[in-house]
Length: 290
Length: 295
Image (cartoon, rainbow over all chains, first blue to last red; front, side, top):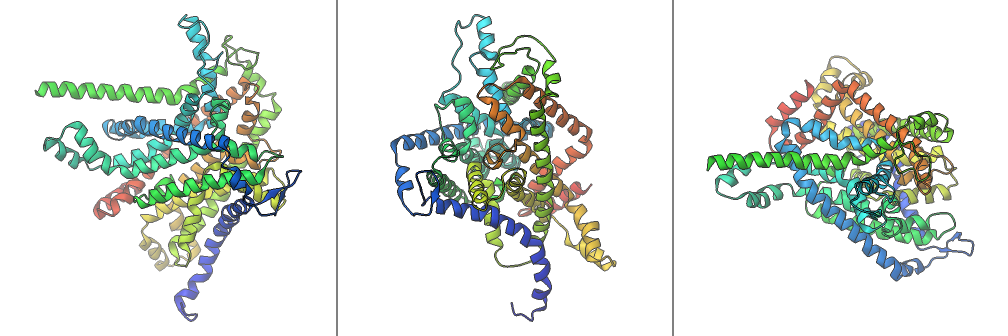
């Protein structure tokens, strides 16, 4: 890249003009804020809960508080169960809409997208209206005399898992759909021609070819479900907090922001770890994007 | 034997239909509940038990100033976000595709952060930044935050389109005497249009749906989802359901009206993804897919 190089000189200006605005934007509003969080996680607070630059490891020591550890475990369990349920329900579904009913696949694909157009918070509240003590389901069950008292469907871990699974299900289905659609039909035929049974074909031919879709679907469900505090708020009612709830509480006014920052660092670390595993296993980052 | 096999195939097909119907049923269940509850004549919190049919909530909606203004804010925010993210994202995607420079890998890394990081981390990190630079929180901070999480999606969409892009058309345009600007608007932009439209649509959807990031950076400005969140503790009044129902009807109408445009767009988007995968294995296949896309 000598200065006299004609090509280099003629490209520098347009390259700079086109690329700099967006790069500056990302640096300013993505990179710098994350550095702020990292720095803040080592800061202290004074008696008025103002953040001071007195560096400490105290926030990280506080993370080991048993009541927090219990919530990390609970959050990981909720995320893992939601991911597994999404995968187990989503895989056959994606297979059916992309291959078995492929003549209608565009409409079937659209029908997965359409619920997105109603705000997710409102849809989660719709579940609460449906399952609540005086909600639709209990009203129906009681008027049919199936039960005499309203059933407590809500405010437990199961309800939170239901909400997470429901909200994130499309993020599992769409990458699976893309991966399954690309399957090589002739290999499936070859496998059954050679005498393999349905299940053997499934696990030896179909699943290995769609591993990339499985991985990206799992990442797209697992990571958001660690942070989606409003779902556990609305359906779990404080009995099934996730890491997101802990962070949200610390960042409400008058609370311990540095502790919240340290909690976020945990969440960032989990995310980076999972993404590294994903990349190591040959995952394409861009297929997480759409 | 053959008959048995046929029967089994048929059963499997039926089972598949039932399975899909159940999944779609669950996906649409809360939406059905929302629509039903918008006609609920209940007047007592938490507005859940069914008390008969009424249109009252639709009438009341138009006198609920704070709800309407929150909806207005959501629209202004989504439109501003979509315009800024789409313009900036398209320009940088083209620039990154066309020019070689150092640090592309770093830019890619920056782009993936908003996509994979939990929204709550993004929300609080922006809150911390805005507080420390004393940026007044409200519409400006909301627009900045929303553009930040939409920008990568626009770039990915436009880039996917650029991957299957035939540069010789641009060269032909230049050879025929068009200048750079004319070539960009006459040749490059129309070819990228589906990718740009896809990115814009995704930005708009992400923006109107966002709860978590907005929750931290909204200041005093209420968006529609935040307004709903605020009222959840005491029970969301069915005029919110009425508004959601109207929004749903409007989007479905919009899709039906523009269907001739929407469906081919979606098809080309799907094909685009497939063609990316195919390209590595089969050039001829890609060519035919691309040709189909253009037609």
